[in-house]
Amino acid sequence: MKMLLLLLLATGTSLAQNALPALNQKAPELELHQGLQTPGDLTPTLASLHGRIVVLEFWATWCGGCIAAIPHLNETADQVKDKPVTFISVTDEDAGVVKAFLQKRTMKSWIGIDKEGATFARYGILGRPQTLIIDGDGILRAATGPEQVTVALLENALAGRYPATEPATRDASAVPMEFTKGVPPPLL
Image (cartoon, rainbow, N blue to C red; front, side):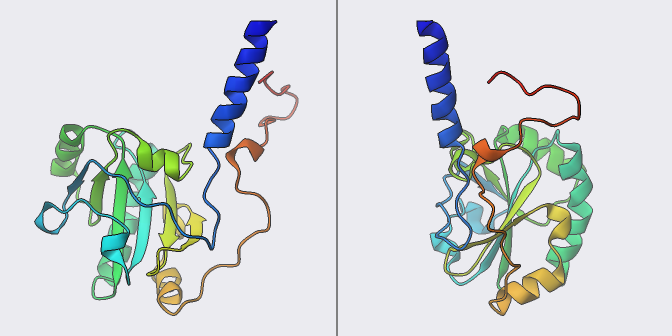
């Protein structure tokens, strides 16, 4: 019984730590180990990008959806390259793995290596790909998939117009437990 109680307490703590940051609130600072494809080998921070729209993508070299989104994100980045917009793709993989991947595939974003997973945790990222839009004042304005990042979305963001936010909670513990009809939800 004590073990079950400890397990339930640990699960509750874990879910609380996965709370996503609120839209229209200050975005958590990035905590990256290393930057790749950045000017002067800069490790990006939101503070250093003040005044710029940040397209923050969470991805991995092994993620099929992430890889499929690369051409779209590259094209979008090309179309806004003369505007104050910075694309940062954050992964928790080893820099050597990412460098090998980049020798085979072009990515027009800066790459942030989140070696310890701190940025993933701060943003409550549980799956990939996930893309966030942060305004020039460091306010989290939108959470979407990479395929929804368009020139129109970024032009609107530059003009201070953001998609309407849903009043529903963004707490990761609110993810429905029943994913398939007829399948009972898990015990925990």
